[in-house]
Length: 186
Image 1 (tube, rainbow, N blue to C red):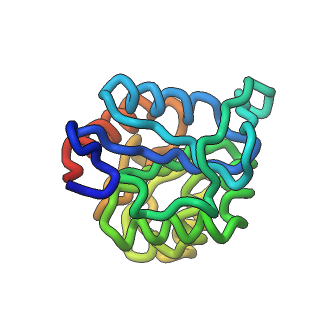
Image 2: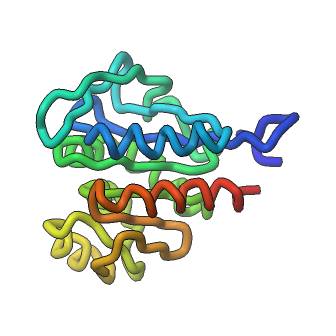
């Protein structure tokens, strides 16, 4: 049983790691819903306390309360990590050393890490894409290749515990992979 596994069930903890603004709403809420529907615990982790601002393609789309900050969590606290996209969100997130460290710790611990759209920028900053196949929003292709990754144009790419998707249209495959990874976490 892992430290994050409930003593009387198979409930896992999934951390959704975001900055304080610019989070693409559907890239947070759809995977969050899939995790909750599968009976697991979703935890919103942000660079700041309070609430985070969601967007629908740059237009304000509500807020969501933060459960923990990136400074107050480690890989030992979660089973799976999800990095939602948007443009501003991962750009800010990759500048937070606590967030970058959490991503690196998760990968080093062999725990599943999921990144969609522009979120692979954070994977680059954590130096965990070198030698891996990944995908992303097409505009990140050069960044990922320059960081040592092999970029693939596919709705979902999995390479040694790092899962990536391109855009909101890929959310069905992305969410299915998260739920599948939760079944495999021990």
